[in-house]
Length: 390
Image (cartoon, rainbow, N blue to C red):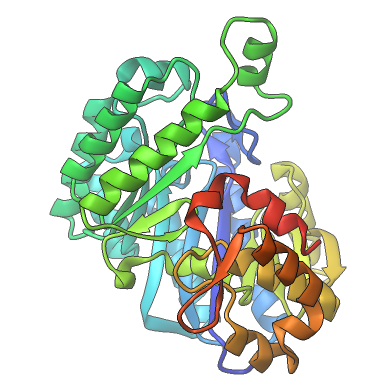
């Protein structure tokens, strides 16, 4: 990690009022009583990380993910932001994002988080169809999404993103188009579209196995993605990453781009992942175990005090990540200039055979600056491309 290379912070907030049927993230419902101790634990991790890792790099993005960060009291968010500013060199123009459930976005909360320093919100809209929201086990209505956006704009948070899910059982092309059109009518700066993934151990998976719901149809899912591309492009959105569109280059997610460019980020909180000093980390996933680990760490400080996994990265592993994650960026791709600057060799010297195979199969192409790009008509089989580099 270079001295002036920008750093990102990710804070995982694993609390949910209820779990969605499709979710397999590290989240827990009914444990809100642990929030005060959890906030203290994250504060401790921030300060210990500052002391032991000597991270003097300027912080240019902070992301509160979950779970449901909007379940936190505004005072708790403010305390975490104050701790971060005390511990790190946070740039004045830092992007500070909070994921929010539309049902939590009352005017007071939005105004208070804006005061705390949140300047970007990722709103979990998911659908504009009330039946689909019920099927997803979401706890908000389409009306709540509209209200949430009004509150965000009133508080001066115009840089907000809307999340939508496609390929869900019983979702039709008509309802999908309606969700997209409703989202566009709210004038978001950014839109993220996620194809449904049926994960093991989720209620959705069990319902499909019991025959209560049909499994996702790959062809229909691909048609929905293609329809979204056409609708969003017509509305002027830039498709800059496989699942992400931005109104302008300036409002592309700075934090997520940090991951795709394999730049350093520090993961804080239960289950959070990090990547600093050529080391990947994963924290304890259990809230209770995480809190206990941080309570012990305050007396016996060690590097990565909450980590359950600490994995040193070889140069080849970092090269592979560079190619795989870079190819997710549909405009900039895997930059040969950045690769050579970082690793002192060219992409072709390391991955000559992989690149030649993928070019021959028509899965990738060269861009105007000789960057390698994933062909947009091959996005739905992108895993074939990524596997070449593993």
